[in-house]
Image 1 (cartoon, rainbow over the protein chains, first blue to last red):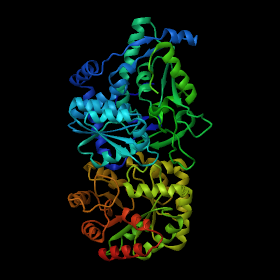
Image 2 (cartoon, each protein chain N blue to C red):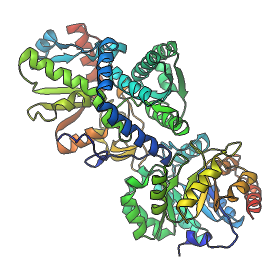
Image 3 (cartoon, one colour):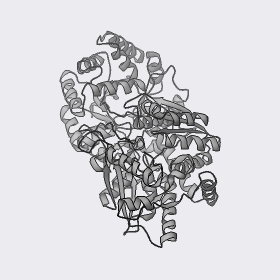
Image 4 (cartoon, rainbow over the protein chains, first blue to last red):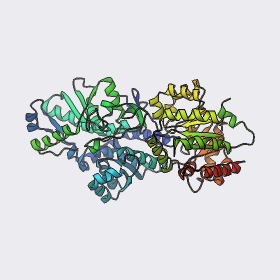
Length: 352
Length: 257
């Protein structure tokens, strides 16, 4: 089930490089640099060291006793990515790609952000590495997430509001790609999820696999066994693929991805391409996509700004089709109920 | 010989290729503008199929795409428009579309429809030849040219690949960037064109950022044709009067001859 280390960029039918020709040489260069870095022990030890001293890894695997009792079923463990630097798993990928960009001699970083988590993580890593950082963000999100805009600006990053289309994450990615096309010689595009053209989906997955590698070791150390289920939310799907991937060959571990059901899958107001979309091409890759009957990408809705995206990483599309993972959706109300329950039973602040 | 190939067979003739977004600012405008452009000496017309996420386009064509979608334009209506235009003019018609609308329509079905209504070729800005196998087979089956793009960043190896795969002509992207009018041509353009000429005998047409007859004249000094898009969209923007478009196209044609 696991993909070979060097492959053609396709997970079954999904993935590929659907980008303007201008970017093709840059993707080839990136792929080469990525493989070289990942087989260089000096790079890997720097990544590991910075993951500890900068990002604060490893994050704990926490047994949520009161939440488990309240639910009355499984023993629930939480992999505490909220305790990583900048407050989310996004730092794992930002750090990895930041170090890679520096190694490639790219001084300028462009990134996109929806909720602002990836933008803040990228901005902080760029500050730490002395790189210039430009973050594209839909004007709608700039207003909704003003505090994160302020944080990014404090690091010296430039936040560029994007007024096109739906003025959210999808349009911020379009604009980041336009910038990259224009400044490709000097610039690295630090994409924030396991989406985009090859090699981004495997690169982001590999940098996020630290989540699953740690969790696997922690549960073996603490309980002497593997979990029965792993449950993760899926927007683009980087945290989910990061925890799923190290368990792919463990056939007894069920993998459950949860998409944003918004106001319900029977409405147009959701962000669940795996549960309710069809294959299409967006942002450089073929994958499940929310599109209308004419192949136009649809606007999405979720109470969770971080999941508000019409596409999904191609590896998830592959696992959906092969059945290795199961994908379902919960609606806004269910998500808010879970949010409140976690606060009340454990005093833990989940991301929304 | 395809309709597109015959354009480049003419002696001492440089090609003028114009781009319009179908249904911008209205369907009526498209149906008027295309025959007018042909009458003014335009050799090939690109019909843009609007897409929700035009990531290779600058603000002018982004806005035109957005408005065209608001006007209800679909791949189906683009085929209908092409069919109507084919009754009015013999000018070669090429669809310019991002890949997803065609993929979603069905690659084989779309190419069959193109053949039936008299469309001559396709240009897909987000489809490098590596991803073009299925579309390549379908276009060949239905007698359509599939025009690939080359960029200043293309390596020699990629230049050879694209030169081999592209049919009709090769679309040279003048700058590393998106579509849109620019004040001056990039300095590296002549060395880029010269580099491509060493790799192929196929016709080379240059687009992105070319907006004046003077720039067009400079371009055809080194290439076989020039592609003008955003400037034409801007002229259509200013209203339904087609006089400014006629004047511009006539001047541009004169600059090439």
